[in-house]
Amino acid sequence: MLRPGVELEDGCRYPWPAVSAARRVSLPEDRGMARLVINLEAIRHNAQLVLELCSSRGLRLTAVTKGVLGDPVIVRQLIQAGVDTLGDSRLRNIMRMRAAGIRAEFHLLRAPSPQEIPEVLSLADVSYHSEVEVVRLLARAAESRGSTHRVVLMVEVGDRREGLMPTEVLAAADAVMKMKGVQLYGLGMNVGCISGVLPSPANMGLVAELAREIEAQLGQRLELVSGGGSLVIPLLLEGKVPAGITHLRMGTAIWLGDYNTWDHPVPGARHDAFELVAPVIELKWKPSLPEGEVGLDAFGRRPAFEDRGPMLRAICALGRQDVYVEGIQPRLSGLRVVAASSDHLILDATAARCPVRVGQEIPFRVNYAALLFAMQSCCVVKEYVDAGGAG
Ligand SMILES: *Cc1c(COP(=O)(O)O)cnc(C)c1O
Image (cartoon, rainbow, N blue to C red; front, side, top):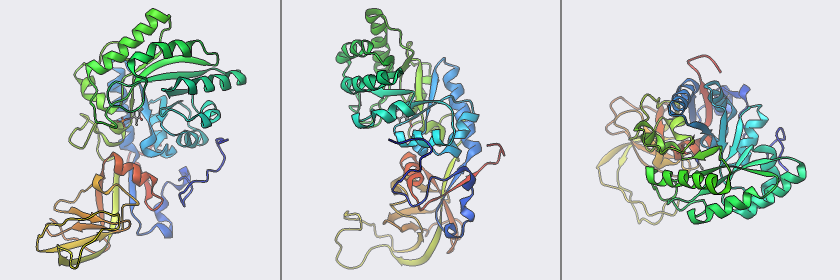
């Protein structure tokens, strides 16, 4: 069984960055490596903003930590900003936060497998489910420990990821209410992840309506009716979150300051909380088209390139094993990502506004997928900066 404090054996070469390792970049082996520069002040700012946005509309907020793998240095900024519940899809991340002494109400957002029920009980205060049979196993285990665990049932409202179909919800709620060892704590919904379905007054309203039915027909008041993630922000701003929704879960809005993609900023949020920086290791004029018979690239794809004549190509020490390359954008104007393999990123620097040189560190903006990969990569140094000084 996983226990807080026990060293995790994970695929990564580095141990979890400890608080004291906040400026790892000074280690000799880290020099010249790609870095993820993490601005703690920007994170506190965004967390306060999102918290205020929710609370001013009477909604509770669970900040979602999976995008940063529950990194304790980062998560402490959320606590400082006033966040009191944290949600993650992975028990490992929750364990990491608990082991670092972070105190909050922890929500396990992804339904657990039957095998991990003991860890769910010891690590999560609330867990989200769509299989009544798993809740039953959880209930039995909790009962035998003499404890009560809080359960949120997820409802599938159109994205076709997790959740009970709406017609199954009442019976499932009834079954859970009859179990000892668990409390039916709430209903939740999630959209925008697998199919890109947007939250709407209609699909959120459906969950609010089901919560009312549970109250009316089964006599159980639900503490939490959870309407979704960062994508709900435009509805929140327009006052279109239906009555009956009491809770939201947000990650992207806090980390990146957008609720969807870069084109959808949260008003007032900062976009500089995370910046990926990688050094240039080669800079040469080369033809823009490959030469020779072309098969597949290192990732089994058949690449297609446009003939742009001679191109000033900069290679950065960064690759597909470090970052989701489609999710980064050079912050220096005129630079453009051309291609990448596992360890090399090719930039077109032909139109660069300022001269690029070997050894120069190129900053990149990251999207959510790129943030996840960079946080995960053992070869990307995490560098914490805090202009505000606190934390
Ligand atoms: C990841 C996740 C969230 C957070 O979504 P953002 O778009 O990053 O705010 C919310 N709920 C669930 C169930 C999730 O898995």
